[in-house]
Image 1 (cartoon, rainbow, N blue to C red):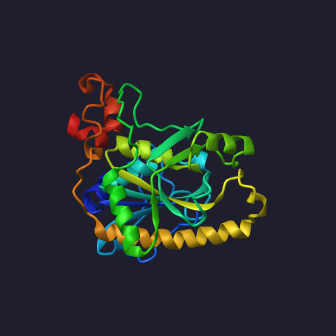
Image 2: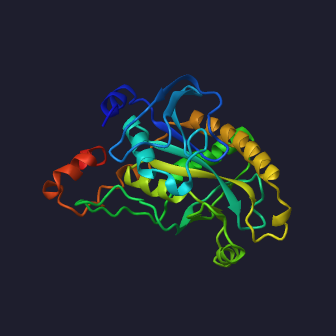
Length: 296
C-alpha cells in the first residue's frame, strides 16, 4: 500500500479534489504545494497529487492524463485516480474536461455542467467491486446536485457563464467520431461528447464522493458544416481559454466549499452491498477496506 496510511493520517483536511483534463495540467494560485506520490490497491494514479492551499482551503490537484499528457483516455487508471482522492480524505471532486458540442447552441468556449451520461465505451473497468463482493449503487442522477449548485454559483462569482444540464456521450476514443456516429448521437438528443468523465462519475459514486464535471467546449463535433474549417491551432487556442475560465470557476467554487452534504453521495453504499461481508473473501475485503470500513 506504500504511503497509504501516512497520507491518510497527515492529510485528512484535504476535502476538495480537482481533476484537470486536456489543457488544464496545473492549478494557478495553488500555494504551499507538496507532491504526494500515492499507491492504491488498484495501482498507480495518473500522476502525483499536488496538494496545497487554494482560496484558503486545502485541495488536491490531479492531472488526469499526466502533466505531460502521456496517457490515452482508454489507458487511464480511473480506479486508482479516484481511490487516491479517497485516501486523501476528499469529499468533493471538481472535474474539468474538454468536450465537443453536439448542439448548435452549445458553442466553443461554453462551460456546461452535464447532468446525464451515455456510455459508448468498450474496454474500461468502471467499478471497484467484484472478486467476491457485489454492490450496485444508484446512478440515475450521476452527478452531485449540491456540488453542481456550488459550481453554478461560482460561475456567477467568477463572471463565467455556465449552462446547466445536458447529456454527455462518453466514447472510447482515442479517435474522434465518424460523421455517422456524430449525427446518430445528435438524433438521440445528446448534447456533448468526450472520452473520460463517465468512469470517474461511477467510481466517485462508489467511493461516496460528490462529483461534478465542467465540460469545456472546444469545438463542434464533426457533424457541423464548418467542422473542416477548424484547425489544430483553433483547438489549442480554445483549450487555453477554456483552461483560464475553468480555473476561475474552480477557485470561486473552492472558496464556497465546504457545504453541508445534503445529497446522498456520502451514503451511496448504504443499501448497495448485496454480499454478506462477513463471508466475503478476506483479500477482497482488505482491498476495499477504505470504501467498506463503516459497513464492516
